[in-house]
Image (tube, rainbow, N blue to C red; front, side):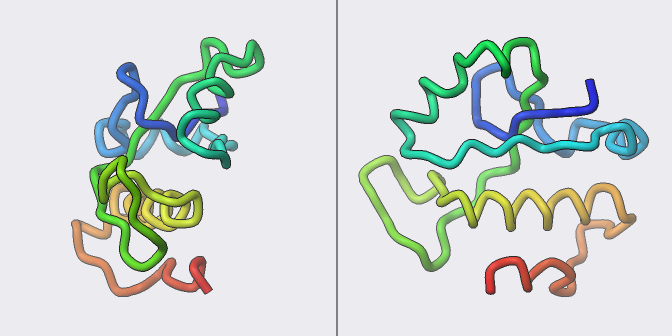
Length: 107
């Protein structure tokens, strides 16, 4: 498949476990933008059936808001940012180092 769903489902594969060469064939990252309760319902949509799911490494919310689901339940914007940062580090030979290459996504 040339698409993946970014979602912390039990069957999601960690972004870092996908070989960089396999990311070359992925053209679309589907991100669900809704409340957590609704996101689980959207995930059952038939158009997303069978689409591989990926998850980012845990990150704490930085500046958006806190709620009773915990500090690692991120806003959509934070998910996009952390996905882009982790993807860059994993596929661009970043070697774990990071110098702000995708920071502009939040502003």
